Length: 459
Image 1 (cartoon, one colour):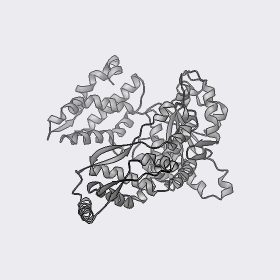
Image 2: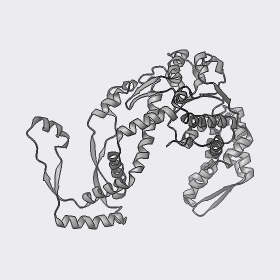
Image 3: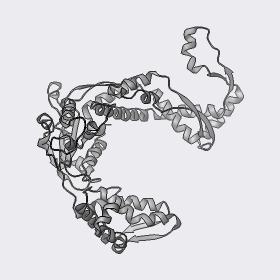
Image 4: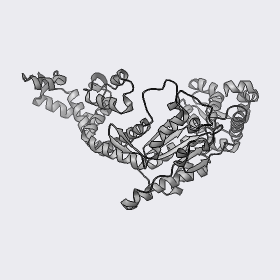
């Protein structure tokens, strides 16, 4: 849930754990998040007047624009969604309008609030789930449920026409006490039980494309009876299904929806990527005019009311972060009205060799740590020398400079190429230790990185 009372310095420090450099961008988003907390402390009359200062991030792909927005949402517990502005210009684009970004945000807020509420009732849900498992492992004698002759009651009970009543005698009760004790002791985790599981397929959405435009598809689907099917699984796995099901019954969904809408309104973040590609100077084209897409997005960013299946939501206080490389177009190529809604501009720096080296070594759960952990599962230990890490950083910078600059994403391709043979053979190398040196890096990558045509295909 929201943690907006972090100071800008604390937010920046948390961002530094995962993202290298780009201090100016981190400072701006940190201040924006702190201002939200400050706004909540104002009196109601002034609070209405204070709106977020939306941010426009300018910089090539892979330098951290999306990651900063995603991480800031996670750190502060804010609902977050990302959209690509270009999807509204695609030829043959049907089904969703620009308001769908707000509905996606509310959907994410509902999931967040629901998870929080479920944690609050977790103990009760576990108890109820164990009671149901006990009944499944030691069922009583079944008696067919009597059906009513009243047509209305027959219709209401149609879904439950196969329900059965259970009769429990003293023998069953004693057996259940014994089974419950074993359940609580974890002795029956591998036993098999059969439970009813709700189907998740969206058949209604498949039959009626375009319904998402006003949320009607979801509303109609909620009115339809939920289909279930029987699945046999272990007690351990079934317990998770049943805990979730019982927790869902224990929480007040109306209260969840109201809280989620308020959370999205006051702390939501919408990240609009590739916004430069709908600017006038962009080479991007489509059936829908770029200026038309800007004018469609404008009311959402300016502040409007959007209808969702959870109720109406005002977008006035949602923080919008636009992002784009702006290689061809310039921020001034956006329509003036939209420019005015992104008053804060920040340019993110192109990554240098030193940046790549820091990205490999410093962040929490860095790429090198991930590969070391993956190989550790095969009982193979791997270490990288400082010279090897520097060589990898130099190759990443060189390939980005000579080919398309894809920022830090280049490191994923380079490391996969470097470690391909080791990842393939690791299952037959239990107990081995492999040290990745500069010589190892050169032997695997040097001939590729120096051949421009080859590096375009491989790196």
